[in-house]
Image (cartoon, rainbow, N blue to C red; front, side, top):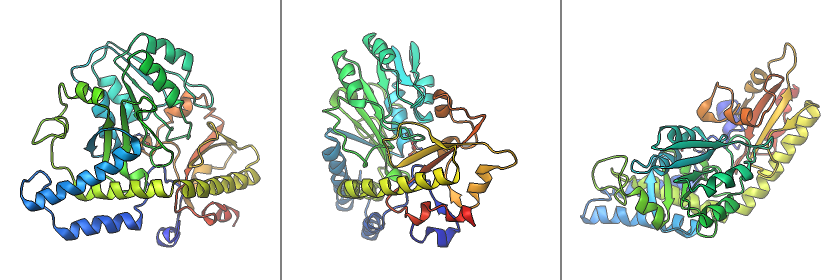
Length: 366
Ligand code: PMP
């Protein structure tokens, strides 16, 4: 990443945890700050101007995701909680063992008669037969992520959406890792609710959104989770942050413009790192399916008297698993039955600013 190593003395290979703001996003946010706008809920001129900027950003999300309703949140965690913790809902909840904690934990705390966590195979792919069986029982919600944040495994979301539609089941997708990196059409994929976050696509931290179909909105609207002033669609109260929404909107616009170029770039980066890892650690293998170049999750055979994590940490910023569960064994890798006793696992993740030099592994050779 240009300039990062010079500034921090380390190489950043953790873009899946957070990506740095694109300079054009910073510029867009600075422009809004410079306007000194009022509260977007205020009825005076300055408030109306702020609201118009939020609505413009909202239109960018709606256009790209093909859905009608947006609730701005503080990030993906809040969006997942709003989608799942429906206070008036009853019935079975269906999710997957490899979901992010911001899905698994609300599922445990949500009103439900029964919580079903469907398992995955060694590649991290959900057991579709098992899932279909439970969808036929008409649960109140199915929540399955698009792309896994630790391994990059992509779930068959369109196929799951079709099944949910056939059986009249509400479908929520945590698309935090996928959004802005592949096209998502909520209507075509039969997704009722979709979670996204700004800081995974070179936008600011502290802003995310839940997109909803009319059907989902009507269900969620029955009883809000939080109470306060002028809630968005009767659901999320509080002042909507104009600057962050504009920054997120700009990041989305750029992500779609650069989708193909970013994809081609990270493919080169991932392939280069994989080639270099294989040369240096002959027993290395990949965890998960190899169809998501933004993330490379690898298992390297443990060596006696060598702490590989300490070695890599001297030069690189990376993650053992999700940044949100640092220090604990990964529930995702455990679900995939990865042999964590005999292998050290690393999640390296890349983005627009990762350079081929960043993945040369030269520092480990010196
Ligand atoms: N879902 C997934 C798949 C994620 O990767 C993350 C962030 N690690 C989250 C949800 C939570 O995102 P946020 O930090 O924006 O709340």
